[in-house]
Structures are given as structure tokens and as C-alpha cells.
Image 1 (tube, rainbow, N blue to C red):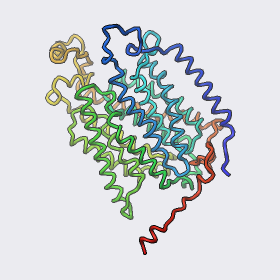
Image 2: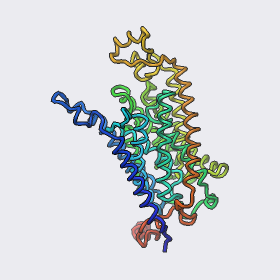
Image 3: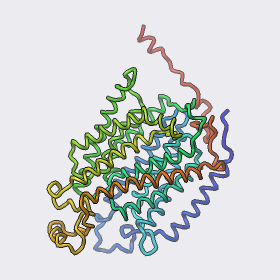
Image 4: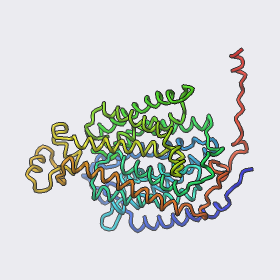
Length: 473
């Protein structure tokens, strides 16, 4: 009979109750509707079709599918940890989104002492949630639900502050979130994992494996993420040709990484067979790799090349880098987030910097100063008036050169990695505290510790081989 964690009966409800009371009080005190949701701003001249709901909600719904179905199913690949992979993803995601509305709202959507709430806030909160879920992948199966909630509680403010500082002061281009989502989440998660290192798991764990059914469920999660990734990458790009390019580039990058993943999986397997872990993870590499340049004029061929390159880096990372990090640096990366989000994120950032350096008016026309808003002339510059004749309403920029913008991108990469890694280590020190009920080594990757499970959940599946025997006969 499996051991349980009796302390959850008190600690988890207590944590949820206290945080929900605090969150409800903060919402009551500081959150109001934005102009698209507030009835006071509507008149008989208001056109309902102009409401932001109709442009923001379709993308919000797509990202919802990625967060709750895509991530949830993808994380259910352990044979005895299917409940934990899906349900703890659900629990953590809901809490992270709820909390991110407040944390991000304070920095980005606050006016007159109030956070103005609309669908766009929820969309941004889902991106913060995605960062949390990616980070949690590094410690999947080795943490209690209480630890995951505390991790989300601490990571969301660090993410919101980093996002605000990078966008407000460094003013970078990061349409697909390669810097602020993928790199941040990766190194925050690795920082937590470093502190939560378990020597008893250095040689692996008997339950740290998958089954036929769990692999099928996990690849369904992959398919949800694959299908909706173009929405994720294009959600916050400028409407029009920028968003159109983002969808095209994401699809091309994903298709390239998928085909490359199948080829490399068979080539690197000593038996020449496909490995489901490769299909579940490496096929998605292209979506990350095109992220930093997804709305730029990089060409369809470049998007395809980035997808294939990211796939190769991700595949080799799973084969060689993950074991090396565990052996040499005490970083146990359960889901390989350093491969799917770290390595590919770095490649994406390098590609984005190159795309910025070569961007000019000959390629973009006057819309160069919309795609790269900080390169637009400052207020008072005669060139700004000339450009406004061609693009009415063009906002004044900072007058940066391509080289200057590229240097700010580099600075953002290093700053984000440094802050996220430090934040992850500090969060790990808190999450490691014994009163948060970390599971013992022998009960890691086991649903029986935190769930009521069927009596036969850990029984081997008995297959009837009569058909195969008949066929052989």
C-alpha cells in the first residue's frame, strides 16, 4: 500500500485559503475594468465590433488550450505520475494566472492607482503562467503541490518585474518571448532544480520511466502545443503584416523541426527506431527558435533553417547535455527544459540580433519604424514628420541605430539569464524547506503519495498476445 502525505490535509487547504483571501482583497481594492469592459464608457455611438474582446479573445483561447491541455498532457509522460503531471499543472496554472494579473498589472496596466482589467491582461498573465510551468518542468515529480504553489508565488513577481524592467528600460524586440519567457523560465527552473538536487536520484529512479499509455497522452499534449504555437508567437505582435509573418514563420519553423526530429531520432537510435521522448519534445523546438525574429523580414527559408537548427541543438542537448549537467553541476532537469527552451532560446536570440542588424528601409519600407519602434526618430526630428505622412499616427521612438538596438538585445539576454538564475536559486532555498512536504526519494514520480489512486494503477499491463501468436503461426 502506498504511503500518503497526511500534512496536505491541513497545509494545502490553509495555503489556498490564505492566498485566496489575500488575492480577493487585492482585487477588491485595486482591480477595475478597462475601457473595453466598463459599461460607463459605452454610448449609443459605440460600435461593439470595435471592442478589444473580438481581437484578443481568439488568441487568448488558443493560449488557454496550450496552458491547460498542451502542457498538462505533455507533463503526464511518467508511468506512475499521470495524475500529478496533469492535475498539478492545472492547479499551478490557475494560481499563477490569478496572481500574475496582479503582479503584471501593477507594472504594466496600472493607472490612477487601479489595475485596469481586460482580456489583454489575462493574455499577458498566461504568458507569465507559461514561464512558471516551464520552470516547474525541471522539478517534475520531485516536488509536492505545496512546493509548486510557493514556487509560482515567488516566480511570478520576479517574472513581472524582469519583464517590466527589460521592456521599460532596455526596450527590446521579443515578439515570441524567447528572452522573457523561454530563457527566463529555463534558467529560473534550473536554479530551483540546482538547490533541490537529490543525490539519491543521481543514478535514476525506478519510477522515472514512461509507459505505452503515458507516452500516448504526452504526445497528445505535444500536438496541442504544436497546433496552437503560431497563436502563442503572434499574440502580441503588431496587427497586420507583422502578425501574418509571425504565423508563417512559426509554422515553417515547427514543420522543419518536426521533420528533422524524426530523422535525427532514427539516426541516433542504435536500433534505428523512433524515440517517443524525441517526438514529444524535440518536434516543438522550431516554435521557440523563431521566436525572437518571428515578426521580422527574415525570409521563409530562414525560418525553416532556424527550425531545423533548433531541433538539432535540442536533440543533442537531450542526448548529451542533460546527463552532463546532472553529473557535473548537480542540475537534475526532469523535462529537459534547458534543451527545449534554453538552447533554442539562445539560438533564437542570436538570430533575432542578426535580423535587427540587417534590417533597413530597403527591406521594410517605412514600416521599419513600426516593427522596430525604438528605431523611429524622436519627437521633433524632421524625419518623423516625413514618416507620419506615409504612416499616420507613427509614434516617436528613440532614434536608435540597428547596432544600438542589437546591443540592447544582448544586454537583455544576459540580464534576464542572470536575474532568473539568481531568482531560481533563492526560490529553491524557500521551496526546499521541510514544512512544504517534499516527497521522499522513494516516492518521487508516484501519484500514490498525493492522490487516491485505483488499486491496480501500478500493476503491469497484461496484454493478450494471441493475435500476434496467430499471425506468427
